[in-house]
Length: 103
Image 1: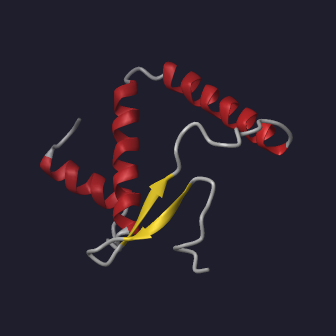
Image 2: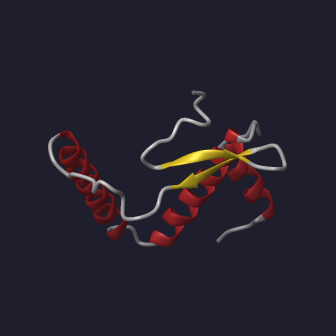
């Protein structure tokens, strides 16, 4: 089986009439249910603590909206890079600085 047709717990890929493959997610809740034990429980705990630290850090900022706005920009740059655009967060900030665009 190719990676595009191999079924996975999260869903499957199906060929579409237009020629592309679309990912179709599996129904929720998953069957069998996800078991949160062992390594998965440890990873979930680490992620929860990291989110708590991030939330605590943001609470100490005088203008947390600026932090969030910068993260939105970073995500936009990363998404563009996935599509093949050669840009950086610094490039975006320079352009916005010249045009005085702020969220």
